[in-house]
Structure formats: structure tokens, C-alpha cells
Length: 156
Figure 1 (cartoon, rainbow, N blue to C red):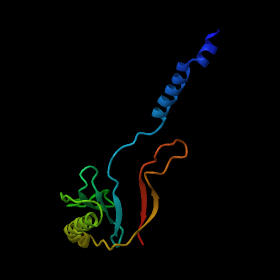
Figure 2 (figure 1 turned 45 degrees about the vertical axis):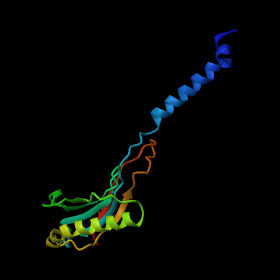
Figure 3 (figure 1 turned 180 degrees about the horizontal axis):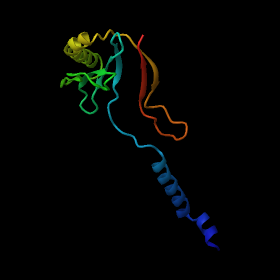
């Protein structure tokens, strides 16, 4: 009996094929990573388009604490406008559901109040729209890998 026939009928032959297929899958499948996924709200541009503001918010992975981050960007200078970014995390022990949503809304309101003076000073009027968006779950056409997050905005 040749080795080829023995390998085909051996119970270890199937195990080897299964193990090889399993290892191949582990190397091909992209790594999963834990982390919070923030929701996004466009706060707008200044009238002349020199300043842009946005907020990202959600619940932190692991702790479940609600958070809000507001960024004001100098579009021409490609930098944060001081004292931006405004970051607030409420270390509150909450369950899922309405209480969590209420806590998140309260956190966002407190952070918006902290940023309000800068938004007013820079003339951020709440105008703008998202004209392009590639979510993390979108796959690249050439490889089965996430393309990352990218967005494009326009003032109106």
C-alpha cells in the first residue's frame, strides 16, 4: 500500500486536513477587536467655513460609562481650536435601557453646555451635512478587510 492511499484512509489524514483548514481560517479572518463605537453628530461649520465642530458620544466598552467628546477644528490651520476638545465621561453605575439613555443625554447636555461659549465665539451655526461615509463594517473590494472609517462633510 502506498503512502498516498494510506494517508487517504487514515483517520489522522482527515484530522490533518481539518487542522490545516482551521489554521488557514485563523490567518485569513481579520482580527476582531473590542471597543466602543461612537455615535457621531455634526455640529456644523462657521459661516465662512473656517471652523468645523462635531461630537462623538456613546458608552465606553467595559465600564459602560456614558461619554461625550466635542471637537472644534480650525479648518485652515488644521488644528483644534483651544480649549477644544471637550471631553466628559460620567462615572455612573447604570443598567441598560431608559436609564442609560437618560444618563447619556445628560452627559451630552453637560458637555454641550461646556462647549457652548466656544461654539458661539467661532460662529458655529449647526449647518452642514455628511456627503460621504464609509462605516467600519464596509469591506474593501480587493481584500476582505475593513476599510476603516472615513467621512466627508460639506457646509451649506
